[in-house]
Length: 351
Image (cartoon, rainbow, N blue to C red):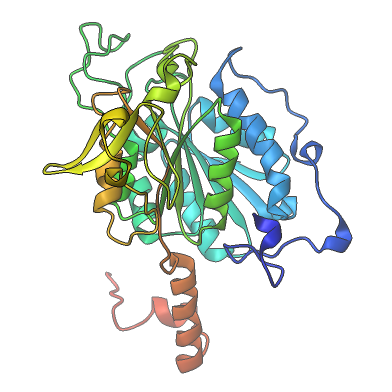
């Protein structure tokens, strides 16, 4: 947790509030805006979890920024008493990249949905991930377009009947975890809106990671896609299908286990397999191929679902490398002149 870090900074290198100034509370992070989502929306649970988690960061509110795009989830910045930016559709990662690169003293968060992040914002998302910009991305995945009233989204299953696909969707959906791992993201995790304990545990790990962290949150849209993740919440089956991933521990549920096979990874009945064969999770493995294989285990959907941190590896963040280049250039050449740059040898004047 943040409090255990040394030298007055957290894992992302951000300055902590001196102990003499006291701790902030949940109340400090609630804005005066009326929360306006549909009654029963999973966004309420996520908001409450984040609001109660933020005091743990030990950061001043003015050093925290939430950037969102367009969608139901993107109302998030209004409800937090921090700085915020409600940006344009799909462009939140691009705006957050500029902010994080120019202001390394800030804790920058991106709030986005499956439509906002994976459709019009797809390129912005993958480039933020591959660059390892020092920010946290929370991707609310409800497998539907909620704000525009129930069209299929990039994560909707094949055959989904919606207002825009009355005969069933034809597109094969994105797997956000697989996509992030393919983009070489350093920190990738999945959690659930209604599991506050697990959600906050993942957020703690994400905020200590230097670079981009992507957390996919399964979020229920009770109006246009109610019950999409009901199997993960049903007490009769959830313990059997949920494959909890913790670094250094076997990947298994109450009745199933993950083992290596000739085709990669396989989920088998736990009762019929020797415990020594069960795969022990290594979230810090540099090669992302095993994490990618884990991300494919929920196909077909929800027969068994990996939950937790798929990958957490260290590598230099984009803002760190960029600022090192700037410092090197200044030390070698001095501070540049914008006018000289604009009128340099590569400038052409057309009369």
